[in-house]
Amino acid sequence: MDSPEELIAGVRRGDENAFQLIFEQHHRFVFRFLYGMVGERRLAEELMQETFMQAYKNIGKVREEAKLLSWLCGIARHVALHSLRSRPGKNQWIGIDDQEVTELKDAQLTPETRMLNTELKAIIHDALAALDEDKRGVFILKVLQQMSYEEIAEVTGFSIPKLKTDLHRAKAQMRGLIRPYLEVRDEM
Image (cartoon, rainbow, N blue to C red; front, side, top):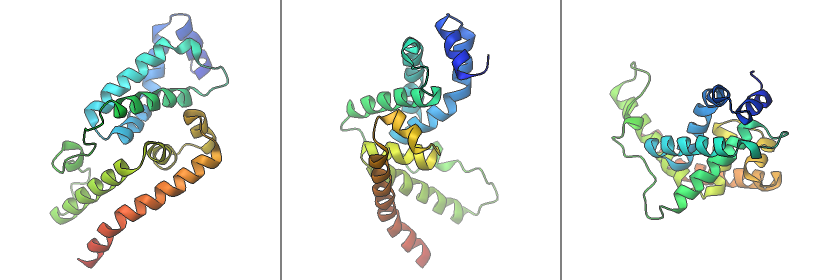
């Protein structure tokens, strides 16, 4: 019982192990997507739990022809947008001293390189947070999660031409927001 169709059928029959397998196969992807959308680790973890609870409750509504991952991303997108809209005044950025920013994988980096990487990561995160919800979602799904336009259209319900336009505008906006930092960094 490994195919998405078999897992969905198993969950519909009440097999909790089937849903556990769905979670194990997709939770990392869903978490990365949510983290990109909301920018806070704890909130992304909470929203991931909410996403899988909604998926479990609504497994009977998944269309047979729909890809399981696309369906889960659609739920995650809805959960993230609902969360973002219900917190209008909340800052959506990571502090420079947050664990996600300060932990670097390569211990061979010099302190200066670590500081510059930390700053760049914060700049990129702030630029991503500056995108409107549609552009941020498309950017995350296409650039960071490597989904096809067809899969993204299935998740978002948007047409492929709109997705391409949003992605083009998101990339241009990201370049505009990040370029001043990179120009200053090159002058050092």
